Structures are given as structure tokens and as C-alpha cells.
Image (cartoon, rainbow, N blue to C red):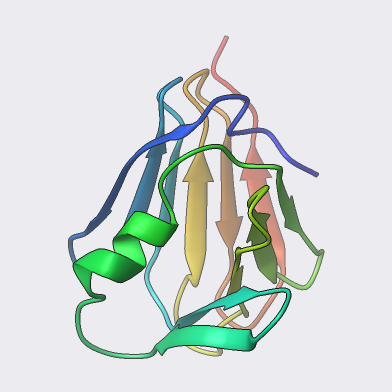
Length: 121
């Protein structure tokens, strides 16, 4: 399922976690470790603590092909360039949250699983 990134990533930043914001206003926050990989080489960057580099953040800006998650809480963001961002669920923390500009919210629950909330009416 995917409810965001009908547009490009306008901003990639790091503020107590990785934050991706689309030009439409959707926001993806990742608060646990993640991996950035490409089709040819496998894992390019793995971040489990500390702040990602500017070059890593630059990889995440631009158009997005898809944003998909599983019922167990794994998330994958795929780019046309072949780069992908992957987050596994965390045993103790919300691994990621996804808020659409329209108000929908999806959360990767601690221990695995997904909780979603529809947009307010």
C-alpha cells in the first residue's frame, strides 16, 4: 500500500531521525536504523546510529517510484535510479511513521505490525 509521494521528495533531512518530505506535503519519519541500496552494488549505506552524510541525504531527494510496506512493518521506498531505502520493524520503537498531506497516518508499531488512521473528516 502507498499513500504518499505522488510527487517528488522536496526535502531530506535528519532531525532525531531521517525525515523525507514530498512536494505535496507528505512526511515520512524514520526513527530506527535503515539501509540505502542500489540494484548493482547492494547496500550503499546502513545507518543505525548517528547522522547520515549530506551525500546520503542527496541520494534520497527527487522523484519516487513507489512506497510500500508489509503488514509486519517493513518499509521500502524505491527511486527510478534504482536506489531504495529499506526499514525493518523495531522490537522496541516505532520504526517509521508516514503522514499524508490529507491527514492519513500509518505507523510501524514496536515489535512489528502496522497501525493506520484515516484522515480526519
